[in-house]
Amino acid sequence: MRVVSGIQPTGSLHLGNYLGAIRNWVRMQEEITASGNGQCLFFLADLHAISMPHDPAELKSATLEMTAALVACGVDPQRSILFNQAQVPAHAELQWLLTGTARMGWLSRMTQFKDKSGKNREGASVALFTYPVLQAADVLLYQATHVPVGEDQKQHLELARDIAQKFNVDFVPGYADQNQDVAGVFTLPDPYIPPSAARIMSLRDGSAKMSKSDPSDMSRINLTDDEDLMAKKVKKAKTDPEPLPGELAGLADRPEALNLVTIFAALADIEAEQVLAQYGGQGFGAFKPALAELMVSTLGPIRSRFVELKSDRESLDAILARGAAQAREIASPTLKAAYDALGLIRG
Image 1: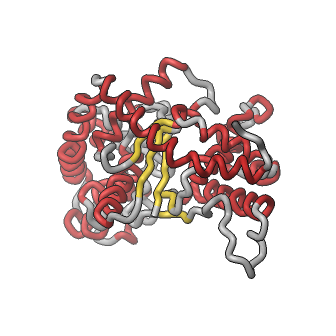
Image 2: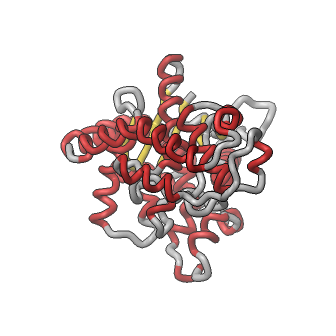
Image 3: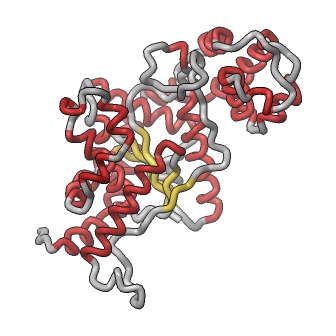
């Protein structure tokens, strides 16, 4: 089992990132390490970040800060491979090789391009349009067997599988013949949707995901927020005047209330029903302080570790360099096989 996943180093990690993805990275790391039969590769997607307008100095700084944040959250560079894309040129190389296999129609249907380009699609970068091909390269390069994805990312993993399948059929003799046991250049990765992945919404709008792109800082809990600011944001989080119900069905039309209950359950690592069993019938005047206390006790140690790490540039550089060297070694055979399959002469 080989798990591959990445995160863009754009802005600070927030609670949604932690509960929806990073905590599960750490859990997968623990499970795979304990089994002794697998490997985790986690990367900072700095090449993806340049698909949108960016400040170069901020990107460099954010990459190092995100590295510190991931380690503070529990990603262990001694047990997982942690690196940034730009130090592994094979990502960009394989993307180009795969663009001959990817089809315009496939990319045109990607919802992320439609969302991020908005009404000015003619003004969007080519990188934004071909972003999913780089995502495919990110996982196919390492023969990933499993890729952690949220519901909104399934489409991109399906595209990666389509590209891998077409490449294997087109360029690996005998692969398409079901009567022959012929391995392809690429493994077709399966989605891994962690059972404990929580979908965390904005503190200002229960129908929108918590996001670092939201102009309101009060909409999210950043892992860099101090204890007072975390408590303030929870106190000011949008709610409604009704008390919490005793059962989950009672939150069906109350997105902000459901969000706070979901956050509490995720932080406490219990089911939402258990939260309502304890706090059902109580108003938010009682529930919010309890949520703030739980949040501070859970995230406080992570923040302290992050503050300590982010100022140690030498250690962060060493972590990324070591991880990139390991990643390049793993990627090399796949990249060579792709060149060979395409009939390209490579020195």
